[in-house]
Length: 208
Ligand SMILES: [Zn+2]
Image (cartoon, rainbow, N blue to C red; front, side, top):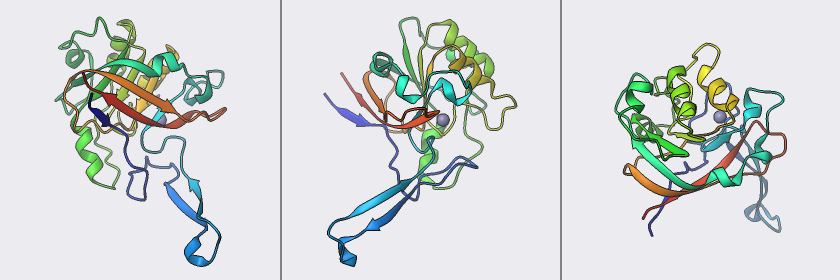
């Protein structure tokens, strides 16, 4: 039972979505400075690194991070690989049998972008039609391998609206570089931050 950690490390090198708070670990107390212990303060966006989006991200009345279903966040997940650099749409998704899948993680070229601390706006996102395709097939958890499920600056953020509006959970910021397509058991545990539109998560896959 091999465990694969698909969480990106949170450090000063983690790319930041434009406009979001960069991740920093601020030293409040340090033994090296004569304090009795080491204590830090974390500064970060709710959407830093590997994280979930709650419906609250785009809907004021939607559930926030603390209300996300653990039943959905834990369980069998399928990893598919999509070679398109243009976007994840119905044509790309139709090449995979998703009829049994509640949880789907989409591996793309994006996973290679984590090697760079710079934010890459040319990452691959899910199109509006792709989002409808997933919802229509009963997928409830969609994981992507860069900082947004949305194509960069797509007006109106249709993929977010379609997915979160349907009650799906979006996991963003996965690193799937070392993951082969196939079935896994997924453990995705976002922090229980009350009222948050998103929450950092540790995500681990267990192979069969
Ligand atoms: Zn997000």
